[in-house]
Image 1 (tube, one colour):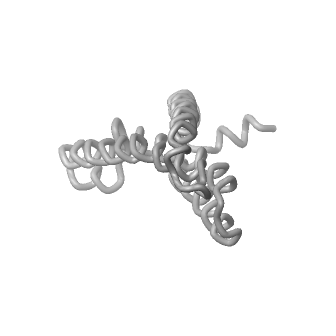
Image 2: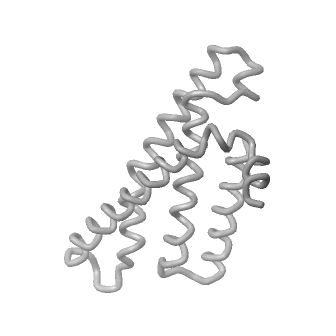
Length: 138
């Protein structure tokens, strides 16, 4: 039953292993960030959210990587012509999508564990789920 469903996802067979690698890298990066946040906790104010600190530390390399892949993917698309630039996907742009989806997947539990308003948690979790769905459909 699961095989036909997964086969309906465009590019699933080609993208599964790279996506899994990005997901594991993001997961390991967050745990390293959490360890760093625990180490700096004594220097932070008393009621500081350690998970929020870890999320900030985690975001620096992840969003830097996403920015670099977006720039390289744009350059790559411009070299192929305007139609590929707007409608194509290969190389760096493909890896951008997979990293973006992996970061969003990691951010769902992070959002739930942060000290935030419940409504914000619901909206952000919905945002992450919609982002994953839209990006992995390309």
